[in-house]
Amino acid sequence: MDYLLGIIIFLFGTIIGSFLNVVIFRFNTQRGLGGRSACANCNKKLEAHELIPVVSYILQGGKCKKCKSKISVQYPIVELLSGLIFALLFYKLHYVLALSPANFAFMIVYYAYLMSILLVIAVYDAKHKIIPNSLSYLFSFVAFLGLFFITSHGFSPHLPTLGQILSGPFLATPFVLIFLLSQGKWMGLGDGKLALGIGFMLGLSHGIASILLAFWSGAIISIFILLSRARGYNMNSEIPFAPFMIFGLMIAFFFSIDLGTIAGWFIL
Ligand SMILES: [Zn+2]
Image 1 (cartoon, rainbow, N blue to C red):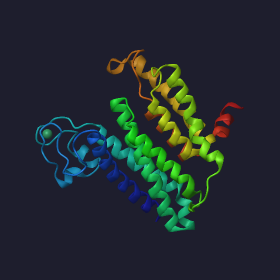
Image 2 (image 1 turned 135 degrees about the vertical axis):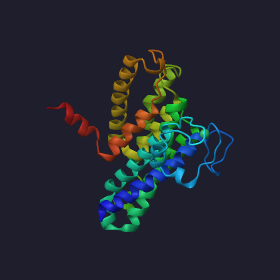
Image 3 (image 1 turned 60 degrees about the vertical axis):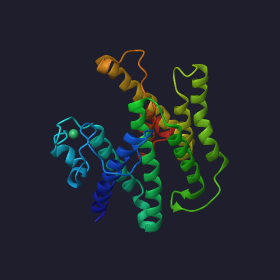
Image 4 (image 1 turned 120 degrees about the vertical axis):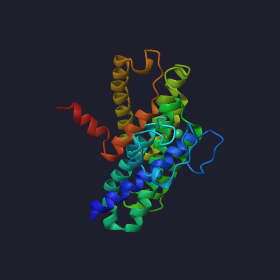
């Protein structure tokens, strides 16, 4: 029964993912979010069965049916990631379902909303090498609000501790300092704004762990990219950092990794 609900939530996540694709493609363009999706090349409107997440991409061999131009692999990747995130949320919050279905519903909608903003930021930064201010502010604001409403048992209005409130600014400070010292060369200010929200969302210990995970995964991937010289990357290439910060956040959040966990890895 439970795994059935998990599969339904995964499938629902892929549908949200295809909506997030539209948000990513149309963000900062004149187009609104309404209207049928169409081929970016020949403008052929997509029919209903071509809108099925992931499946339609595979069935069409990644090509537009009419003009045969390649469809961006971003579509199925974002749909799958979104489905995966929703499924992980279901398992992470599963214990709340046993306590109160209403609280579970509130929690999963809240975190799914935060995660959706983060997925859009990650993909947008990977593509355009910039984090839109409106998205990082929205993320930080929603994460900050959560301090007043979210407990580990679900919805319960309360006043956050000073430590929780300071976690955001504390996590953002090193990024702002790096930005100022390097005059924006090593790191954009957008990463600092993102770190603010991560601090609010995860708290200090999990937040610092997520940033460590971000730097390590970023370093590993950068070395791979440089060695493979893929797509003309070189030492001077700017590699967007938000996808790694968001990857670190997801790992720290879903697998409950905090500073203590990481310290444990190094103490034998
Ligand atoms: Zn086409």
